[in-house]
Length: 156
Image (cartoon, rainbow, N blue to C red):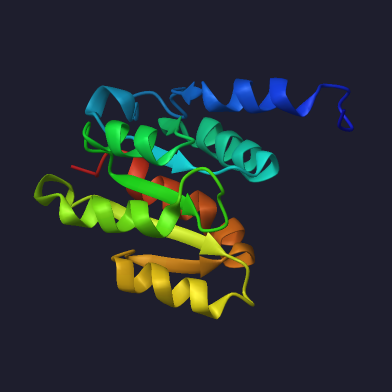
C-alpha cells in the first residue's frame, strides 16, 4: 500500500489506461486537432505529474507501458513521445532505435528524461535517435512548456 491507501498495482492499472482530453480554453481542444502525446513512464509519481499538467493545459496524452504498446500507439503519429529512460518495461533505448528506423515516424519528436548522474544512458538515448534528453529536474520544470509546444494546436 502507498500513502493514499491504494495498492500500487491498482494505481498502475489506472494510470496505464488514462487518456486525458480536457480543453483548457474554449477553442483550444488539442484532441479535435489530432495532436496528442504518448507517454512511456513507469514511475507513478511522474505519470501523475504529467497527467495533471496535461489536464490543466487541455493536452491529450496517452500512456503506454511496454515497448510493443509504444510501437503500436506510435503508428497513430503522436506529436511527441516522452520516455523515462529508467523504464523497465518500455526498453527505451531499443524502442527509440526502432521508432527511428520507421520512416513514417521520422517526424515524431522523442524526448526523454533521466537522472543527471546517468550520463552514459543519456548518450545512448541520443545515439539511438532521441531528440532531447533532459535531467529529471529540468524535465519537471519544463513540463508545461513541452506539453504546450507539442500538444496544443499551433496558432493560426
